Image 1 (cartoon, rainbow, N blue to C red):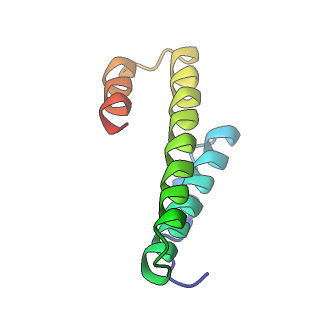
Image 2: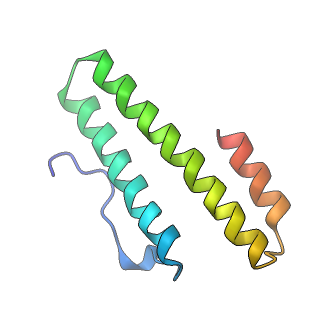
Length: 87
């Protein structure tokens, strides 16, 4: 992949298969956006790429919040608030 901004590293793994997969997808999305920014002048492609990232982030945050609730994560409220601010 040309223009790779982030390389996946197994140190990113958290041990929850669904979330680990989504983290990989998000890194791929960010790298795709980076490639579009440096190699493509089509605004429509950038808009599409940003839209895909936003949709993936929403789904990821929902899953992450579900997992945190299920495991009674101590800092759930703070983490959820960070998700809301990010989006």
